[in-house]
Length: 288
Image 1 (cartoon, rainbow, N blue to C red):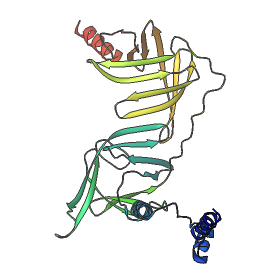
Image 2: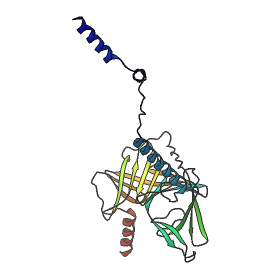
Image 3: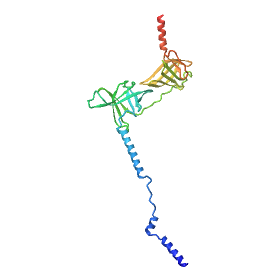
Image 4: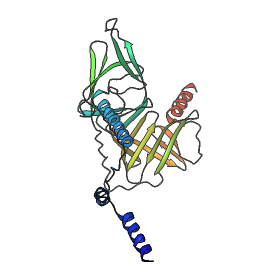
């Protein structure tokens, strides 16, 4: 019996005996693994390299007119233009906004260039600053977009040139008239139609502001009322004031020798232009 107990104790001692090396390994703390594995690090490096390449390209190498606000000054008036990626442009001066389309051509043969030289051209479908509808101007861009010092130089032939510079549009709000009392019958949006086509819409607001919208041109303005007249003021190449008599009858507005109808009223007029009516009446009187 005692021999069995001694043998069992000896076996347990043998089983629990560990070498110093094994004890050292057990006491050493496990090494912490870095949370980012090699494939993740490689992916991040690729993304960072692509981002850096994009910034370098757009900031220093990109030479296209889109995506920049360009400005120039003519007779102390600042003109802005944006060329959009969808082929449209927006031009601004004072409180006037012009819109339209442009076409761009790359590597075109220039009349002033040698047989091996090509140029880039751009043409607007409307008139803005020195641009004329449909006339292609060559353009060349210098400077850095990232540093904000790009210049786009336009030329037509070898003599006529003008430049726009990278800028930010300075929008100055119109000064509303003080102590303004609106005509509630006038307040709202009025539309001018001719031959089933909408030519112009004009909105008179109760605070003395107004907006005139026609194809390719939007004018933000203010107005005052005086003895049956509307004094319409907007900022173009200079401050312009246009006085005109007006009269509201139901859903019709007589203004600037034309008859407008209230938006959404469904009202129609036989002759949208009073000027035409007056001319016809004069011709009929003379014929008699």
